[in-house]
Length: 319
Ligand code: HEC
Image 1: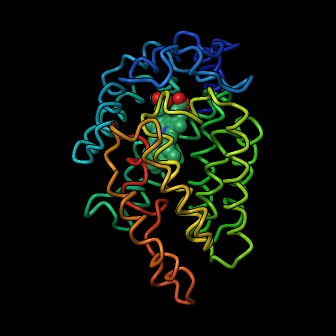
Image 2: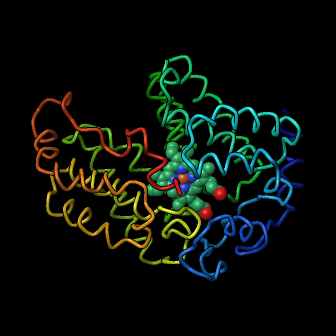
């Protein structure tokens, strides 16, 4: 698709000025969730000034969107390939829709992060990484005001660049992350954790992950009604985020902090309907062993943390 065509499409998709926060497209999205924390969707959907999604009624109601939302919310990986096919057909028919491009990119990202047996072969993963990158880039071109896209595109590019030892791609990803953080810190800071959490515990890069988490907590304290900081649109955002947080403290050997995070999880607002209560019990029970495994010099025995687990999306997104 030419750049010129895309910029024309962009104008039509975003209507020039886009929709204000809390307007119809966002509200539609909110109603998909069975039990938003706040009964008042307009309160629940406060985003930073200038951040706007470009979801249209057409894309929202499209069968491929409906299917993806259902399959993803159920964590049903057996239906994922079919949902990718449906979204791929949908973007061919309606290439100007941000939501379809974004969801196709994220469906591929889901497969990359939570592969079924066989889907983790290098060629399969390369295909998912490429498709994820390309459709996220299209979503970003179609809707530059959806700063959330940088939170997904940045890490995809950084990982791509690292895998290929391609510094320019790594730098592009880090620049996307920084731009996203400037526009939407409450959401995009979390992705900085994803980019640095795998660094060696004693490497300076690992400190970046810890710093991002601290900054994210500070940022969310200032925007308590943002969907990035609540369970308003993602049913277990808070519970899932706290597993990541506890795991990063565990890797940093901060036992008291990790314990406090895991011990507080049963008081989290979505706890009673969360499918991963056993993860919390496991972390409480094995905290000392997990810390010991990180503390020794052998990285080969490091425990599997949330950011590399095959439920890393489901922890937050599964109903
Ligand atoms: C820490 C919790 C958390 C994790 C882990 C997480 N997400 Fe999300 N996700 C969110 C939040 C919060 C949003 C923003 C929702 C919004 O903007 O209303 C979101 C948005 C999304 C959306 C867009 C939803 C919409 O209606 O616009 C998709 C799709 C998505 N995530 C897929 C994924 C995939 C795939 C993974 C794993 C690679 C993942 N997420 C991991 C919390 C999480």
